[in-house]
Image (cartoon, rainbow, N blue to C red):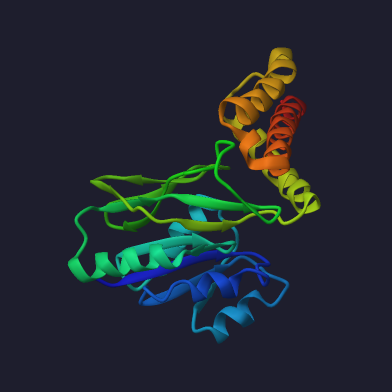
Length: 245
């Protein structure tokens, strides 16, 4: 069993080295870059990755393109701001040694937010299919929340994929601006009619669900921030969708 790691990038110079260095269990690393203006490609090339430059196709399209460019059928897809934990890397080594028993594998993803590992707030375990046989699976999703559709069996790994998210409120707001636009475009494309109730009721419900029912209060001040920003995200998403309609 040989594995191709794929990473799609755009201006990831602060993260790309950590991502690539965590992929020792893979037989190649393919970085598909969509126009970085920083040192992303230079750093990746120095660490032995194969660089492919390609215009942006959307998240699912870009990740499927990366899988097509890989040398091997087994794909380990991570984002530029993610990395394998040592325990997860060891678990993947064991699969390579014994041979895969499934067509794809999920793994829990643990996020670091404002310097704190988040274990509640609806953010964990956040299981994702990231290791898969490209002959039996592919990415889907036109705008946001892309995921792997598997035509086969799915196994579950025990150890964490690490996600290094926003290290400041400013970076969170910047990311939110991009993703709320994509989410609004998704709503419009699906013909969702945004009502006044969506704008008035969904944000406070999102805050209550995240902070109370999903135990965000156990994540400290960072959990409070996550709950507030989740509520604000939904308000902005709906407001943008209403404006686009």
